[in-house]
Length: 313
Image (tube, rainbow, N blue to C red; front, side, top):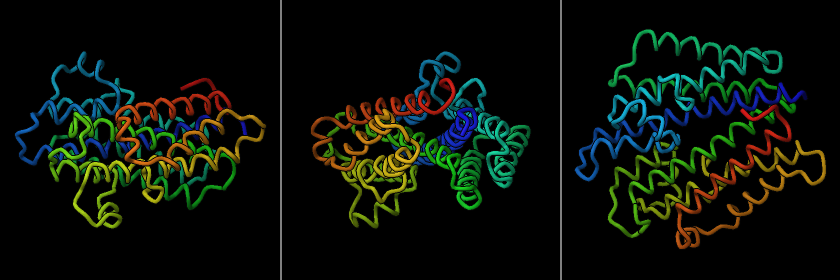
């Protein structure tokens, strides 16, 4: 397949996944801001979404203070912010429009309708009270896109690049979310420290893992088990391990030349997750592990770009 076509499909999927992930983070931050807790002021509660997006310098330059209104606008509607929901969905639509013939008509209609409805919502205005409903809408449309893709797209190389983009982006976001929340809730990374049930449950809900945690552990929420679920469990759909369970086989099919660096990087990351143990990770530092994972995942994304796609996005 032409690298230009693969590039557009890959980034279309990444941007839609990015928009959904940001909606998840904003939604759970907004919900937790309604729970009275004197341990965290407004700035401490609303800074994590900006940390997760790695946009602290730009946010502080343009907005200054970490208030609910400022963070919501910056992460949802600010077109100057490449990580915002509106920027991600706009980029997804442009990538989809460029390769309409490479996808099913239902896929294009889903992406185009998503963008048109988003523009209508922006014209009507988004109030703070509406943020929960808006985030639910973004998540549902992302789910619809994935369902339509799975149900209508030919299982050719184009489909593989769509899946590749989704899981590279999902792994990056899960790692960033986990790192930011653990730094807020366990600044000393002491898994035995006193914990706030609602804060930890909100972290699980942000990746749709609350019910999964209850089913797997049948216990009160513990930080080490939260980390294990989101890093090492291969049966948790948004975990790092599950993402690489998907990425490694896709790259095996795409890498038709021996010595493919993409395949080596994916295999190395996958092995670290497959054979890792959560007590070893905590002993060496969860923050350090997650920062290293983010760097390795980013290196894989760069190598995928170099090997298969156009110049880096």
